Image 1 (cartoon, helix red, strand yellow):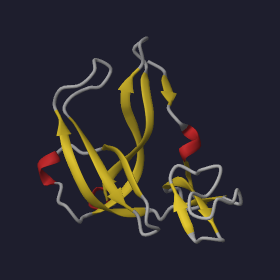
Image 2 (image 1 turned 180 degrees about the horizontal axis):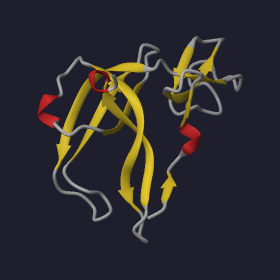
Image 3 (image 1 turned 90 degrees about the vertical axis):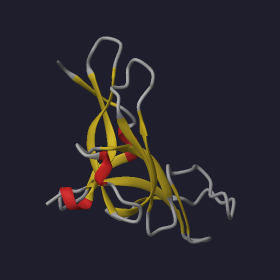
Image 4 (image 1 turned 120 degrees about the vertical axis):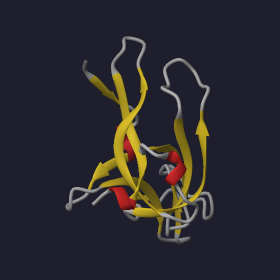
Length: 135
């Protein structure tokens, strides 16, 4: 089966081959947003540039979703990860063992299947993965 990419504008790979989230940064207010906003919500300026968030963040919270819409294979883990820039991002977690996740652990960004399209193709996007599983 073929695959589709959802919101490819939100992530890319850096020079080291790591998947990174693309955020917005405003120099005037030193404020970060994800996704990138057209105008900074602190200073109201439209001088917002694209920058990568740090390659890892800290697991703030998560839940295991056991019932969902038909296009989502259950169970899956949905998490909130705090990045050093002050941005909290929600995404699915790529892990075979949800019980091994711990609040406060380091999480990296990866690309994986998030759902199935109506025609049965895999839809991929950014996901989190425990940094300990990236080696």
